[in-house]
Length: 261
Ligand code: PTJ
Image 1: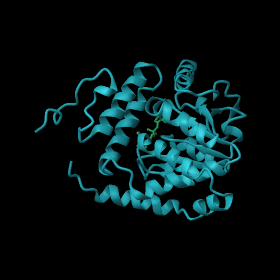
Image 2: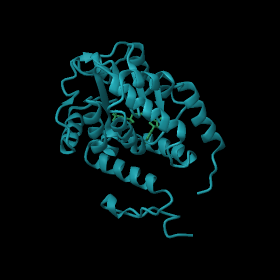
Image 3: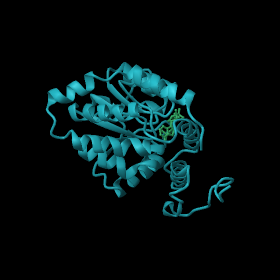
Image 4: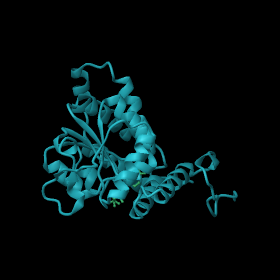
């Protein structure tokens, strides 16, 4: 039994995490979510969301399965084809991949919009500042001067010049109601969610069943490789994708997973 089998190590900085630990990704995401809560970025409910995601990732073997890699390539092509793509940021996304998502926005020329389930002015500001510290130039979602139809409370608030008018929205780790509301507005939706049975990936045009810490850098790498592809080639990539088959494959792998570690 190794020294880490019974309890994770206490760390102040993520560099102290043992990279050779069999569940390194889990230690890393847990640490980043804890830091997010400490900084006022991540809601306490984000810890529950992280725990759920972590269980599915364990069953997937904590790796990007081939159908997820394909979905990440399709997502990159979809974003490159878009007229006005927007990447939606919640408290978990900001804590887990602030620099990575800012980099993706730059490569596919997308807007970043803070869009919270548990919306408070303090969290909006903390997340916008955090993104700016990681290189974001323009962060939308602060004014939130429009509303998604068929959704109550503050979680309906979006920017009129952002998510409201976007043709493609990327909504990682999203609540099912909001994913459905966006789909009903006719948006092309890209969702990352480790749970293939959740409503959000089910309503998405491009569901990605992968951990966001692996998925976003992989989408950026695909986007860089596809940067010079013709519109016709990008469209062929998108049209060849079967979202239901991708979800079924992920579910099969989770149900049949080899719990070797
Ligand atoms: O910051 P806020 O206020 O907007 O709130 C954000 C959360 C995530 C708390 C809120 O949107 C929420 O409650 O979401 P749910 O309904 O828990 O859905 C989150 C989904 O993300 C779940 O299906 C998890 O399995 C999945 N998930 C969690 N962590 C990861 C993940 N998927 C991919 N990568 C992860 N690291």
